[in-house]
Length: 318
Image 1 (cartoon, rainbow, N blue to C red):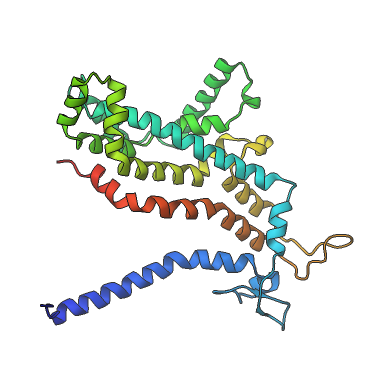
Image 2 (image 1 turned 30 degrees about the vertical axis):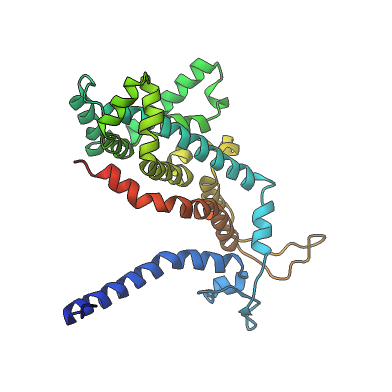
């Protein structure tokens, strides 16, 4: 028999759904606006006529429609610089995520073992980094000394060093993700590990054949965290990669530099393609931004099913 909902409960649900709808609209509207802006003309953008859908035309003749001018310019601006920076971001995201997962899994596995000598001390030092930070300047100096060390062992001058590897190697530590993995590994029944050891499994075989398969949800969640962090990485990439090595910039740094450099873009003249409407740097930037978020939008739905389960398994310690 269906229970009749009380008045107070009904009011609470109505208010909760209203807030959820408002919050969802606030989250999705920036993406809708970016999509509309990238297909709109310069006049529509500067006049504030773009709200939910693309608007094209000139003053006095603004109407709904699509313009591919900004997308075309985003594809050819500065030669292939945008696509080179896009490839740099793909490289840093893919290799960086793998690197972070490897040492995070190894570190979490070691910290989950009761037989680890000084386990409480190592765990304390890990958590301590979440409470206190040395600050931006010491962190920057640390990254630069890491670059000098990479230069010394490779024999390549720092000015010629591929600093994408610095971003991958020196910026991969995340205590929160290691703790999530450690708690997930601690939730694996010890009887399963004992059975594997009786069968002659080595330490690495226990890790790869027992712990990792039984912690797929948490590992997928941590991989998502690492991947988004690498994809959106902007600040330190801008600070450690100088302008004379802009060919190593990730796409986020390139877009920021583009916004600082190009203030107005007009319709090409002469023998250029006869594009109908003029376009601005704002529309081109939105086109670049949309291209920059496509991989995350494509990958996220496939990992989302692991998200809640992975966080719950790794975030709760019994």
